[in-house]
Image (cartoon, rainbow, N blue to C red):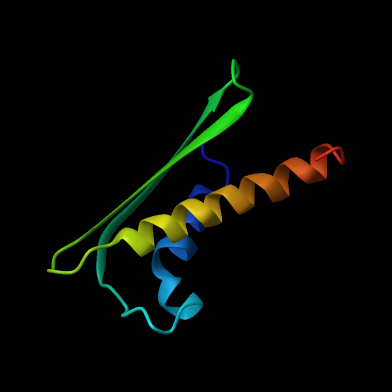
Length: 84
């Protein structure tokens, strides 16, 4: 399940430099965001993977992609159930 997956990948992975100007803009070769539902825990697991050809790390890009995915899920859920 990936609701809004393309938006999560693009905005989450590519827009971190705009969110924090101290971060250099990384030329990402791929961004993947996977969401899976765990009904037993009543939770959604989010895994974000970013790759690039270069010497810098992409931790902030992956964290930003996961954060955008979580915010997207929250926004979609609250429109269905106002108890959130």
